[in-house]
Image (cartoon, rainbow, N blue to C red; front, side, top):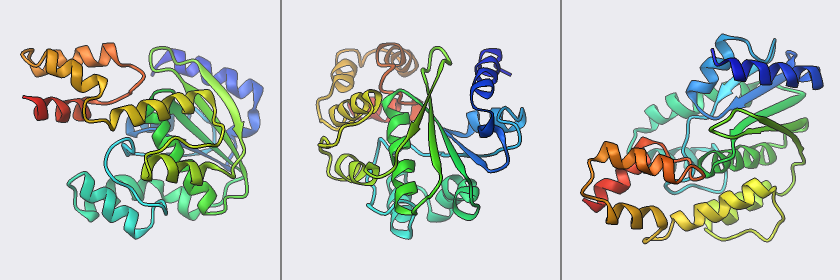
Amino acid sequence: MNISRKKEVEQLQNKKSELFDKDVLNILNGQCMYEEFKDHKLMGDSDYAPFNEAMCENATTEQVFDQDFIKTRAAGHYESVENYIEKVIDPLDNLFNKSYTYVVLWFGEDMFCQMNLLTILSYLEQSGYPGKVFLNSFGEVEFKVSQTELQLGSYASVYKEVLINHKKPAIQLLPVMYQAVDIYLEMLKENNVVVKYISQHKDLPTSTLVNRLFELFPTIGYGDSQYIKLINKMK
């Protein structure tokens, strides 16, 4: 159990104890974080669900989580629809089938996490979620949580502009999401900063190069699989 995470969550509980009750759903960015929070009941009696996706890569569709979305995302990941549903959709069952007064979103500040966050916010709008939404954002190096109450209403249009049309939205965003959109659009370019670095250092072993990329580009938030895919293209 990460002690710094436990202390940080305890501080949140002192400030906002209502987010630790049964009518709260915590959506966590990935399986590892989900298991840690759920196993240790970090958010008290509330429910937990992971979002096991990487929305910063591959095509998507306007309506989040419908059949067309599932088929499109599965194809992009070279997975069967059945495997995609098992990995991504089934773990979100509480989001689809239970009612909550509060939804708390736990997403990092890097681009990878922020595109996942944007997707969930778009779904909450599209599904007409009537409750309150809180974002608990945190840095990857230090788990220092910043809590913000979000107002739904514009995220579905931002999702469409950014993840489908690949354009900067005209709507004002939280600074961390605005920065993430810039990084996402940069990474769509054929000769982006990561590709340039890989091309200059492609003689390095893949494992060494991946570690270098983690160190040099922490705000991107890519995992091993995204970087290895880019490296294999270049070698």
